[in-house]
Image (cartoon, rainbow, N blue to C red; front, side, top):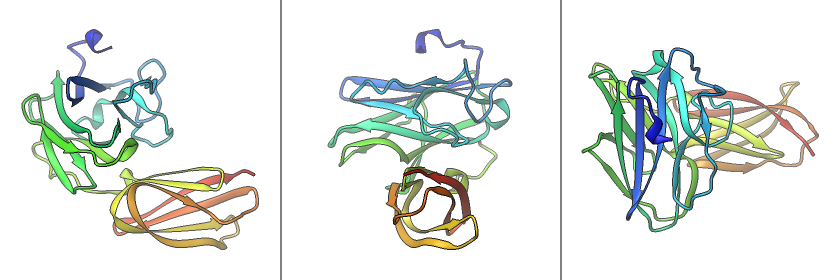
Length: 233
């Protein structure tokens, strides 16, 4: 797909390399795009490679991996995008980026929440990291775009994604800090409440519950985020 990119469309190519293998994911900007799924603009990832890089939708509406994500032009100068990586243990990954038709004052940063680092990326400015354990998903790395006039990006509730599979609740985007997970039934009764250490992608098994809709609340140092979930038997 990279060969067919229109050089007049504002676009970021995020590249990741291990040894002699380079993969990439693309973010482009359009007046017609949204932060959710845009049929005909967003392209899913086929997950067929042992080493890969991808993104998740900014609005968090899907857990699918995307090779090409389109975003609104209005978000170009201040966006935080979940960046996913699939790599074997021991891989040394080098990240670079290429900007096409973007404003001259735009900058791109990669955030590594595990190591608490923000690194500026370009075709000549890179970020190299050793992956100690095999990874396959989002939660550790984030791609930030910002104007030079804006402050450096910081952790916000927009970075947190909550979803479930049956009675397993997944909390993505919190690394190296505590959070509290509280689950309520629709009458407001607390049915689960525990503290957890963020690992980037926490999977939390809930106790046996009736099949119903519940409210999951994630409490962090920067605020609280709620999400309704349906638990099926």
